[in-house]
Length: 422
Image (cartoon, rainbow, N blue to C red):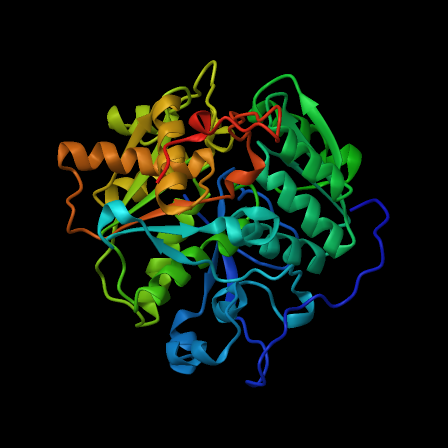
């Protein structure tokens, strides 16, 4: 790799006095051919051009690690370090990736839960993936990183690169919300708006790898972001007493989160920490950009590019999905489905959840609520099922309502205009 890095230093979260840090990570594996790839340096796609997956010695981990040990550890994603690829604490690049809460919504009578990923550093679940990806990139000697982004991933890359003493380049579509662009710039990244979609941004990143010395952090094009995101599945299982919910609904752009959680559940079962029961996994998309929904409805295993993609939920405005076959396999293996909802339904859900429960969902997170309501209405989800909606980011980084009333003369308040008296 080329480029000049700022001085690096150990960047690890406080760990308990429990004998140190152990990872049972052994190798990488092609998601299609099963070819075993050594985890001895920076890796992108497999020789077959498909995503690589991290593999672990789960038999050894099961003999030596008990889930009750977790209670003695800090409430952050690194409590699952045995099943993460980061080799030791000094390799860990962290900004404090806390466990995120499960919040029951009133309308579900305690059975409808929101896992609020907006509490993480940089305000989104992207922090999980970038914490592991940046840790491994720095461990293997990367100096410069680059990413195509609709917003949240770029903010996380910019922050974690700054923390790791690395340079970051972020390329985002012109329509990316201003708060996201400002966040990336604020963390010192080189940021460019691109007249195109996120896959056009991805093409720029690929073209610059050799010329600019970048290590690309594009979705599913390196193996470690998915490892950080699978901690959502670990946390969810632990928070629910090692019993998985009946349904999980996740807003789906690149699809990493669905793939990651499914992988997490398989690993937890191999550890003996959960049984074989699995939730129905549901991919929520917007009607203006729904390549996974279209492929699922047609019974296809691959999704074709969605032309003229548009939606207020910028994070799921992903017209082409590299891991399409993996996402569709998860949906079918879990007896789940993919569903698209309109921007109007997304904004309506965002407003109702905020006003009724005080949860500020991002548009992508609100899409999961809109899918829940539609599925409930037609009977695909019942009220006695436990359903988890993932709010993948804080809604505070998106345009907010601006319809406040005005009091022109504080000395002559028109109380009839303010509201009904008690």
